[in-house]
Length: 268
Image (cartoon, rainbow, N blue to C red; front, side, top):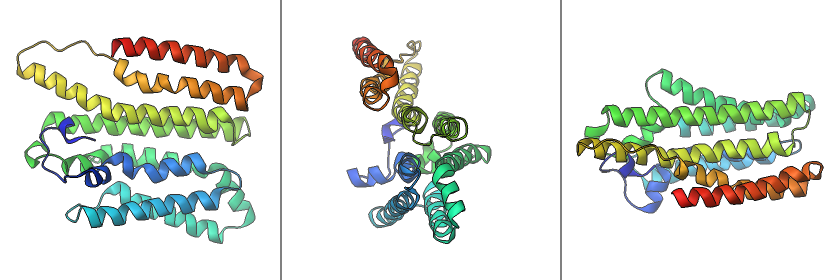
């Protein structure tokens, strides 16, 4: 998240430092794992996620020497190290279970981290945001509320991903279903990513107008929905390629995505 989203930043400077102090980066190992894991891919998915988690922690300590330890980055390493140990010692039956349901376990764990951190009064995005703004802003209502909202949206996104994956596994009995295993989960993550960028801008704009004694502008959703609409075309192409039984849906997504993107661009 950009420092301007919360006020005048005084935290780490430089593109690499700013990149590492973004909570989205802390979620990268989980996102990678939940999208990669599946039958025959458990070990490689865990290895990639654990390597990413360790690399992020090491880079954060090297680049941002004064950076504090974050709940999310600690959870990254502990969770995937534990999965690696369990996978190495697991029986063949347990390994098959992990290959099928580990994605849902990861998404549910992230949802618990998000909502649990809110329940204890420390939404996990707050730890990242505090290092990017002046300490005088840390306890202001707008700053805290913004992080509660963004953390809640991420919790919902991972909950949606977990439900989609569970439906594919338990109801459809198809972990590789293109909708439940990929499309719905990717759309949930992209929506949360876009919201993380869009919402602080809305808060800042409203605060500026309030300070100037002006009435708030109507909420414009075009900027929030545009990246999601832009995904409809590649999703439609994927449906045509991988799920020819509903080719008509693929065509509808391509046409509808193009029209919706054009309409939102005119409003943005």
